[in-house]
Amino acid sequence: MRMARWSARLLCYNYDVVYRPGSENCIADCLSRLPLSADQDACADSEPEFVAMLSAALTAVSPADFASASSSCPELSALRLQLMNGFPRSSAALPENLRPYFRLREEFSVQHDYVFRGSRLVVPVSLRHQLIILAHEGHQGNVRTKQRLRDLYWWPGMDDQVTQHVKGCQLCQSCDKTALPAAAPLVPVPFPSLPWEKVAIDVVGPFETAVWDCRYAITMVDYHSKWPEVGFAASVTSETVISFLSSVFSRFGNPQTVVSDNGSQFTSAEFAAFLRSRDIKHIRTSVYHPAANGAVERFHRVLKSCIQGAILEKKSWRQTVTNFLQVYRSTPHSTTEVSPCELLLGRKMRTRLHVLLPDPQDSAVTRLADSVAAKQNKMKLYTDKRRGARVPTFQEGECVRVRKPTHVLKSHPRFSEPLRVMKQLAPGTYLLEDGRKWHASRLAHSNIPAKKGFESPALDLLHVDTPDVVQPNTAAQAPVITGRVRRPPRWLEDYVK
Ligand SMILES: [Zn+2]
Image 1 (cartoon, rainbow, N blue to C red):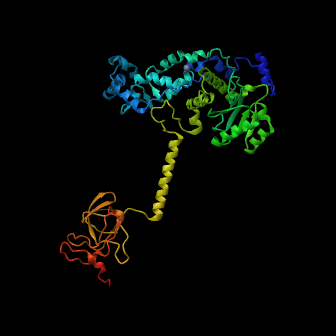
Image 2 (cartoon, rainbow, N blue to C red):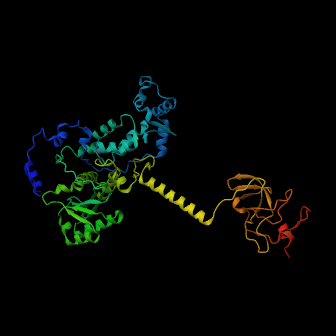
């Protein structure tokens, strides 16, 4: 049987069989003869299974709850204290509950009430169980549940607790995973270098128990990021598939290649014309080897478990699958070890598992923010230079004139009498001898020295804060209260009235 499968797979090649003794065949046999000790977890979950039970009763942990739980947690309080005072030389000198932290003592940092190990939050005892439940949302397997948690959180014994929880999960138990057929030997598919370069599309169904418009599911998976898309339909014609694809492509753009099987929806002239009009290459998997479209076939198993869960829970399929897709897209994928969202959209997705905002560090978003800031700065420098914009500076004791802040009649000067600068209050703000504060952009250097002693300005200066009122011709008509003789400014002496 196995030989028959191999020969069927090799049918499309021209080849010669050459015998090479094992002692000479050092490359091919090296790995199989020196197997690594198998990682139990990784094996158990290398094909992640999902059962969707996305309970709306699960609530996310708010930052406030987290902070208060963190500050009131005796274990974390002791840890914070220990971090501040420094760890002893040996873990034996530590209280029992702090010993697991000893080995990692260099990795912790404290910020307000939060304790971090590297960039991961250390979770207070009271919230650990809740976070495991949140991470197990969607009933992904042991490894994927751990991956979701490890991305954000840490506490001593986290992995064991997650394993225990998943083992004891009733819903996971009821969908017996060990009954699944053994996985066929993997045929590695060349990994496309960019997201959305090559996508796989397929159709699942008909589902006998579905409502009429969910009898079929059209599925699509991006080979690079593993981002999945699912659309339900009552029937699958080329038309429904094209409408599904147009909708997805409207969000993410046209891929270069679409891989599908030989279903009639994908072999029609209509479908070919649609792809041609968008310059998309179509690859059809071999008739005898449907598993070549592995990316999407594998997702189907996950999707079917999710639908099974929806049936068990008597929930709407669409809603369950939609919620499940968010979880799937935000969980690191076992092949890429990065979430589909990060690979496709370049940022982490905020989910109910997040207490703090996803760390944008080193993401495409930060790089974008940096480049936008750099561009804005460049634009500012250029524009300022072009407009000759600058904030003038003045020395204490220097004489300046103040430009009247509001509209003045043409017959009146725009500047006040010279005044002495008393003090610089802030960059760009000066206190003048009349006791008023002005922004430097309102001031101009004066070559004429200020008069000895301060006189209230001959021109009515309206303070920046006062409303836009201009008092007409105050120099001549203003009532003299102090009895002081008012003179027009010297630069008006030759002005003929
Ligand atoms: Zn479960």
